[in-house]
Length: 360
Image (tube, rainbow, N blue to C red; front, top):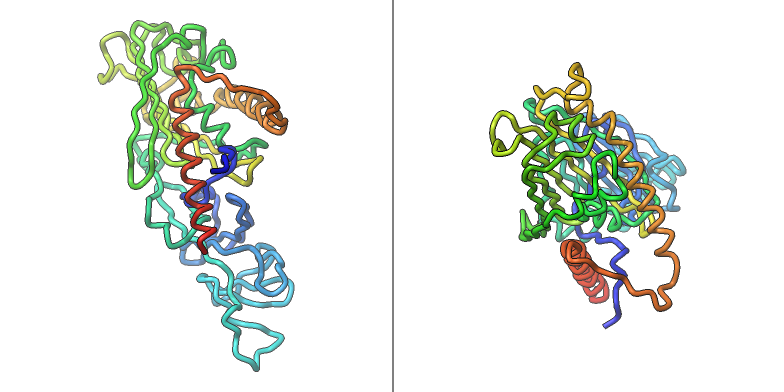
């Protein structure tokens, strides 16, 4: 069987198209998700719709059109209109004729939950195979939430996933902010399973009497801690990071500090993706570095320094992916178990999609 490059993308998956707050009522947005061009909008009643962005007549981008008073979408080229199911409802050039059955565009399933808008770019009949991952902290008043906004990264989305599952890179890439040499020596355990139809891979790192790197002391108060640090990939689109810090012996008490850091990774194509990071901290927690600033605001103000280092690494890796292997052999470390499992799962999912497409 032919080898499949894992640095492609999976389509039968729920991907984040954006944050709920980014979709204003009756404003069209054009996007490309997993190679599919879409026009996405929120109607006057607040419901989300995603359709193929190409008019069925001359492929003109529907995202350049306008919404009509009846809620239909009018193409800016010839005035052909579509309802939210993608069915043509009007053709001005031949109103005296019946609308042809092929006058329609593809409709993509959409789910809005926990402040995120999720789109399924694959086989619509399989959208019930799994559910979008949950992100309850975003809409919980007990938590403060700050997001990065959409960041377009010129690198395959799997490179970001591998970065998030590999916290041994905290040294040297993040040395002096969130990382140090000792972090590389912490043992890692892998847990895997299934949540709502999504595979998950969780890297778990537990440290005792650990001296925190500078940023973590600034954010979470304590210099010497017991720390539970997990990175959990849930399906191809979402990674949930949890960090729990407390003075030795006090994890689970009121002295504990930390965050839930969510990452969404939505492929545009094989060479680029959209990345959101969303930091969530208890609303009443304040930072040590600036006692007048909440922990969440402090993290959000400093975390872009860390992200810039990761983006640099991802873009450099993508440059190397463009070079033929020609005898190159990749080295795997014992801490790369989650990374290797993720690649295997992605290849299996892509192979299933190719098999289904060939059978049509």
